[in-house]
Image (cartoon, rainbow, N blue to C red):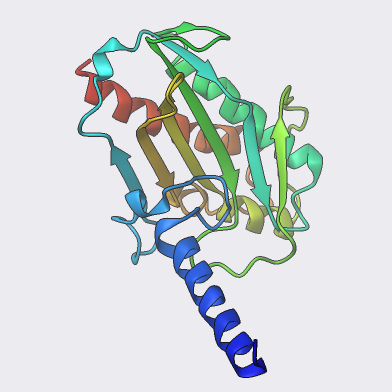
Length: 219
């Protein structure tokens, strides 16, 4: 192939890749697929974007499986202990919001839904401070107490967003999904912000995802 044709092909591939990532592919963090379903809230600061499958029979689901919480973070201030702390908060909140009203199981089934969630500072319109690191937290623990203590950590906490989806545990069909950029903005964290306050704010993502599911189910 001639050099000019190679360059043209490369440019086309890059353009198509960009379109796929920004409109129809994965979310900027890479966690959620079918990103185009959640574009209704974008273009405004602190947006919440949500999707509810209009064809799904939500009433048939009476049990839930939880995938481990994932974090995708680029900030150097987000140490493993910090991301584990956030994952522990979110994991506990999910079990409180969904596990209290549905049976928690470990295997797929026809009446079982699967929940996937992540916390990230890699969002639409952001310029990551470093290379994003993805981590799956299988047994997260909240070990830190007191105040955040540093401006860098407070800045990271203020930028954290929630991504989550509920899918059929057998088919993988998406039932609902939510991306919430308000989590961090509503915190407006400072070095004096307490970890208890961070935990309370982090739990809001789980609550909003659960609220939308139960509203769709009719209870």
